[in-house]
Length: 206
Image (tube, rainbow, N blue to C red):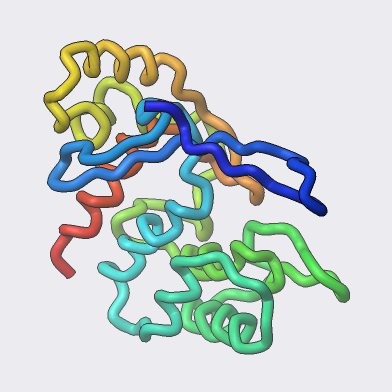
């Protein structure tokens, strides 16, 4: 199927056309797609709720506001900044320990749209096995779309396309590591693999 095309118009003139690749997964199977469902991309901030799962499971001192600010980007409004400060205070940790750069005027790490996620990881979790605070930033990560990742989240389901497994394996080879906007290591994955990971995480008992 062709990608979805979104036209941006200014004064009746088409200024830009965006191609959108998308996929929907249900029970591990692709049920709808547009464009290339095996396209390799970074999940970016859409992975924040997944990154907050260990936080939610490991700590019983967090309320709904703590988990909300740890799971999403924010606009640095007063209520959101207060939520980041409250989450930091429970670590306990200071603004200087946030692994994100300063934003706004006057500049502050709290105002970075990722500060909630970093505040949530300012205190090591038992499952992380880290001797220091913060998120890991050293060394190349294993891409989420490699062979092992495919068996867990990116390779099953569908069954409609006999060449699908071969296409996904090619996509796994194209998967690459990188860093996010705060220099924390990140890995790419296929669109359908990312959807399966999110669906599987949604089924984890709380």
